Length: 84
Image 1 (cartoon, rainbow, N blue to C red):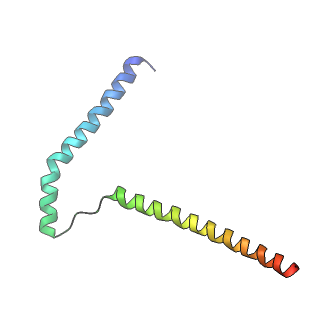
Image 2 (image 1 turned 30 degrees about the vertical axis):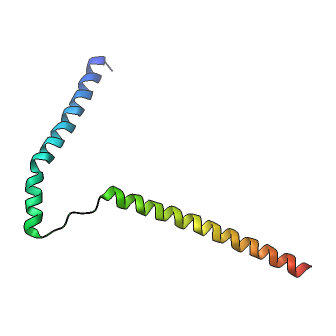
Image 3 (image 1 turned 90 degrees about the horizontal axis):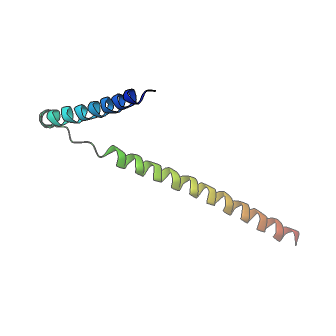
């Protein structure tokens, strides 16, 4: 692709992102007022909830793996005990 087109694409993307942030900033007072009228509370940070959910899933998987390993060890000890 021609360097000029690459540059144009880059600056158009940046312009779009900047325009989006500007519109969000301008509409923020209206959104807050609307929520105030409806009596809604702001949502908790979605990224924070997703991270907590992910951490809990990781802990669950780890605990499940450790439990299976412990059960396997217990079975081995029982077999060894019964054979001796």
